[in-house]
Length: 252
Image: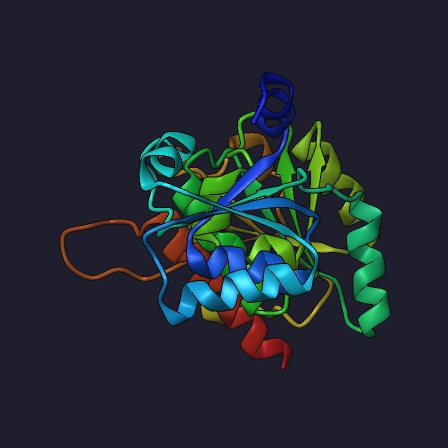
C-alpha cells in the first residue's frame, strides 16, 4: 500500500470483529477493503471472505501485527473492514421512517454520552426495540467509529442516526410536532407507570452527570427505576434499555 492509499484509508471508518463485519456486509455498507489474518482459516472467517468476494470486495490477507496496529490493539478477531464513513440523516428522515412503517414516532436521544460502550449499547437496544432513529449532538457525543460498531453489534448499520447542533432546540421542535419526551432520571415517575404508547422520544444522559438540566426541565416526563440495596443508580445503558423495552412492550 502506498502513502496515498494509507492517507485515504484514514478518512474511512474501521469496523473490527467478526460479527460487526458480517453485519456491515449484510447491510450493504460501502466497504472499500477487508483485511483478514493470514493465520485464521476457520469456518467463520471463510464465511466472511467468501461473502466479501461474492460482493466484489477486495480481501487482503495480512499478519495480526498489522491488524493490531490498525485497531490500536483492539479486539479485531482477525478481521477489519475499511468502510465509508456512516451517513447521518436529518431528524425529518427519522420521522419519515416512522411514517413509512405506519407507526407513531419512537426516537432515542443521547444527551452528553461520550463513552462508546454506553452509546453502542443504547443504540443496540433502540434498534432491537424497534426505534425509528437515534439523535446525538455534534459535540459532547461518542464518535460513531469502530468502537461503536463493536459495542452496538453492528446495529448502527440499520438504524437512522441524526447529528444535531443543539439537542434542546431539537427536542422543543419535536415537542411542537406532538412528540412527548421522556428522560431517564433518578427523580421521576416509576418507569412502568408512564404511558409510552404515543409519539415518543426517550432521552438517556451521561454516566454520572445524568440528563443536562436544560433538557430535563423541558421533558414531559421523567422515568425512574426503583432501586434496592446500597447503590442509588444503574449504568446509563442498562437504565435506558429498561425504559426503551418497557416502551416497546406497551406499544406492542
